[in-house]
Length: 119
Image (cartoon, rainbow, N blue to C red; front, top):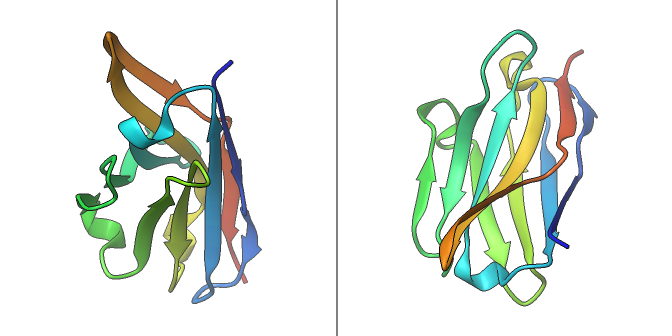
């Protein structure tokens, strides 16, 4: 059974930091690209950051460049999102995503973790 379990969300003041984690199981984690998406109330889900299966290829949305860092530990089947200099506009539910080929394209989602940036 495939599972992506996010953790690390919460309430933080503007300018603060949070580190999200996503623990994966049920598939060959090291062969999947991993991403973080977010969805704010009333808005569409948007891509935040992507990391390739080997942890080398990274891509970020413009609105998080220089503030967020995506990383992964294939030995622990976990992907992380370090978020610094948080702004109120970063308030959203953050979702972990896995995408890879296992005979067919497979895409998996986590249940999401709430991040609220407020004073």
